[in-house]
Image (tube, rainbow, N blue to C red; front, side):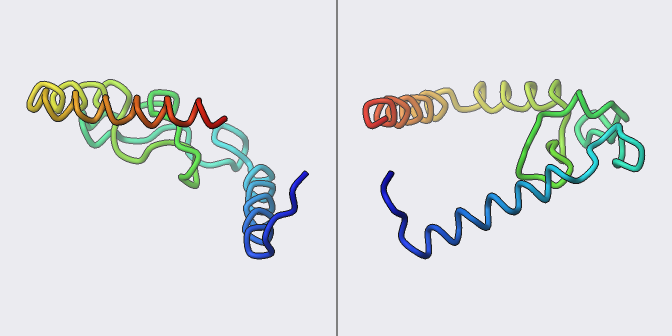
Length: 104
């Protein structure tokens, strides 16, 4: 196994320690684990957390703003408003994906 540069090794160790601390915290739905629902800013309805997209970068593990249905609706509107830009973004994402597959 290749050795990592000291600064990279320190960042990796910090990331691992952070993930262990986060894993030890009680999650939603457990006693004292935080909220089990939230209000969607799109439809203004209070919904269970399962109706929101997962996002590991957020402290509670879910997206902040919109429920899955509102998110789908917003993405469809964006695609409809500018289909050429959507096609271009899709092409670029596929190019990056294929390049990553070739490397890995």
